[in-house]
Image (cartoon, rainbow, N blue to C red; front, top):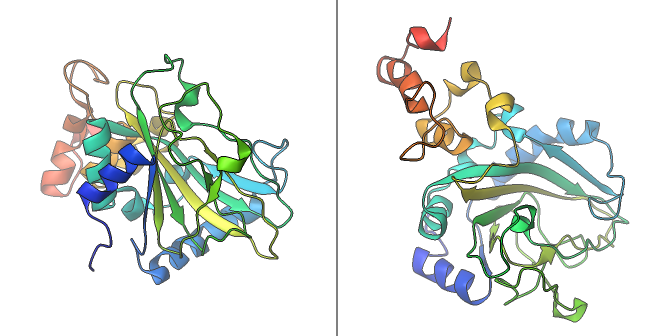
Length: 266
C-alpha cells in the first residue's frame, strides 16, 4: 500500500503546525473490523459525568487488556518512525476507545502532556495518534485542533483559532503533546468512534498501568515490539528492570523456540 505521507513531511508539519493527518493509513475494511470488535465494549460503557470527558461520550480505557484487534494500529510502521524521531525510546501511555454521540458539546481545549508537571518551555514529551474508525466531519465531532499552538503550555488558545479535523475512516491524526486540541460537538445523527493512542518518552510514567492490564501470561503472545511499548522492556541504563535484568529476557525462550521458558510460568 502506498503511504500518503512520508516521515519528513510529517515531522515538518508537527514542528510547524503541531499536527499531521495521514489519510488512508489503513484500509477502511480494517478499521471497520476494529470498530466491530470495540462495539460491545463501548455499548457496555457509561457516558461521562462532566463536560470535559463528555456527558454524551463513551470511553473504554486500557484497551490492550481487552482485545487484540488494535495491536497492528499501535505498531503502525510510519507512526512508530515518527514516535522514534520525536521521542526516542517511548512507551504507550493512554489507550482509549472513544465514541462521541449526537448531542455532545465541544470539549475544552487541552494538551495531552498537561498531566505532567513540566515547565512551560519544556520540550514535547508525548505524541498522540488518533485513529478514525469512521469518517470524521465537522458535524459529527471531528477533533478540533489549534494550529501552531504547540509549545504553549499554560497559554490556552482562543476559540476562534479552532480547526475541525475532517478525515476518512482509516486515517490517523498525529499531534504533539503540547498541541491544544479537544473533541468537537456532534450535531449529526450518528456516533463518531475513534481510537486514541498516546506515546510518551519512556522515562515518564504511562497513564495506563499496562503491566496490570496486560499481565505476563497475555504479553507472551504479543510481538516483541508491542510488548516493549507496553513496558516489558528496559530503558538504558536502569529504568524498568526486573531483578536487575531487562524484562525482554523473560520472553527470550518463548520468542526463540515458540515455548515459554520457566520464568514465564505454565
